Image (cartoon, rainbow, N blue to C red; front, top):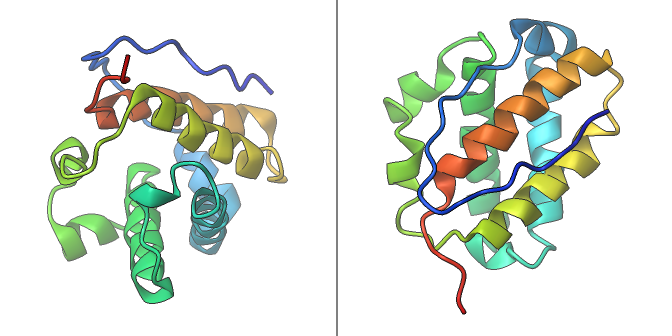
Length: 145
């Protein structure tokens, strides 16, 4: 598996290639929801835990929204659009100070989760490649000097 984290320069907004729809087909909606839940559980104990809800009920809602989004971008049902409207995730994340280092922590937590999936490597790679570039769009704060 090639879990390389691409170098980020502040302000980069590269085009994003969606993951293979086969990722969802093989993992299923339930599998994506478990993957996202496991990811959030890691994040809630990481050095970026301050960016995530501390109350279980609020964290569960965040997991639901994130799962809905990933199901949708993998070609599944448009749950996110139905429940939240157009994603506009950079705008939705703007209230939170997200640094390039925070991005790396977020991605490393996904590496941990993705490396445990029982799927063909090319499907995991497709999802990883999406996350790696998609994550550039969420960074909105420069590192402190």
